[in-house]
Amino acid sequence: MNKNIYSQEETNLHTHSFYCGHGTGTIMQYTKEALQSGLALLGFSEHCPVEDDRWKKSRMKQEQIPLYEQDCQEAKVQYDGKLHILTGYECDYLRQYDSYYASVKERVDYLVCAIHDLSEDLNQEYSVFWNRLSKKDLAAYADMYCSALSSGLFLFGAHPDVFAYNYFSWDAETEAISKAIIECAVANDVALEINANGMRKRMVGSRYPYPLTEFWNIAKEYPLKVVTNSDAHAPFEIRSGRDECFSLAQEHNLQFVSYQVDDQTGLTLIAP
Image (cartoon, rainbow, N blue to C red; front, side, top):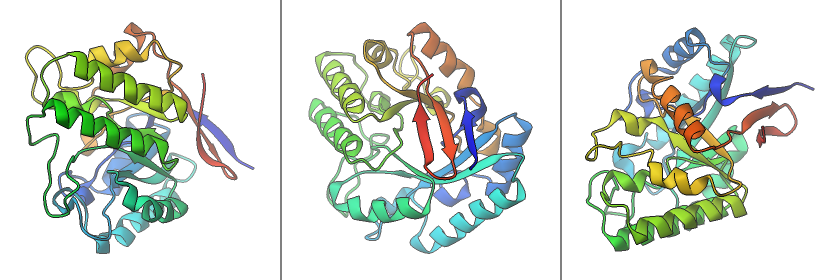
């Protein structure tokens, strides 16, 4: 039985290749870059398409799923013994997709959740990246995010503070939803991610759109499992922003968990 433990410093589980439609680079290009960058564990996490084509503007097509998973498998075989490679998906969440995501989870190594879109209308997207968010939108975001964390499907929640991309104040509402998301993650034993991609986006005044300092200042008061990833959309971004994420965690006294990869139990999180 093989069992390996990987620290956050040698890991990245949030990557998007050309398959996602808004990223660049092939699976093999990412793999080579990860190896050259000193990573030991690399996970691919393309945005998961769903059967009714919801969110199709930012997802691969259904027919690309076998190609993506095959590319990941070929990379696993080619780099066996040099780099541990995992196949995963980043999933937007609505309860109606629980059984579908459960079936996807059975054939891949892990799923992560994220909320990018606040509309429940199949034909109308309302992305947190495209729209200035209202207080009502914040409540919807928190409800969706907590439902995802409570589903039991996901290894960690990606960029939980992404609402700050298009909500520019820190107020009673942002404090309340931050506490709700953090408390839900702790209650369901799901990790939350400090995401470096926000450091590569346009500034909101003098701050990054995310990670949001105030969110993680609240998080330090809880026994929260924390991970960090680059959320790379090109191979050269595989370690981009990670040092800043580690510094943020240190400043807020946040403890990163490690990943355990076991032939029998699969991928799990373990406390430091």
